[in-house]
Amino acid sequence: GGINFKFRENDVTENRFFYCDIAFDPVSFAENDRIGPCYVFAKETMFPIGGMHDYTVYAGESHKIYLADWKNIAIVGNDIEDFLNNMCDRNYVINEYSL
Image 1 (cartoon, rainbow, N blue to C red):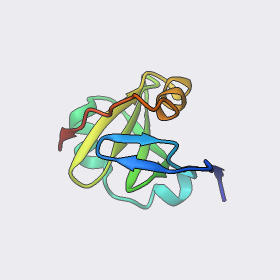
Image 2 (cartoon, one colour):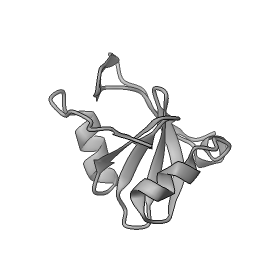
Image 3 (cartoon, rainbow, N blue to C red):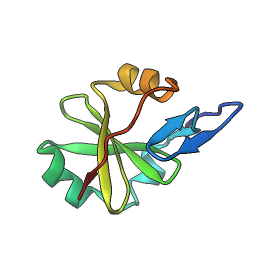
């Protein structure tokens, strides 16, 4: 179990995740072995805290929040509050970087 944020509408388009469902479940998402390349990009210790769409959500030691899939990573917030605000902002665009 974990905490799930379910929104009434999902609007997932290229580089935008407005109102995408977010699952905070560190135990389940710890099984995804995507973190190795993420360390290289982030240059900090990080750990999975959940997932959304096809991404794993990571929290860094600096409190930054990252989204990563098998090929890309993005910084999506300076802290968890910033992350949640960004994910609820229809105009927020995610800038992904190749791993």
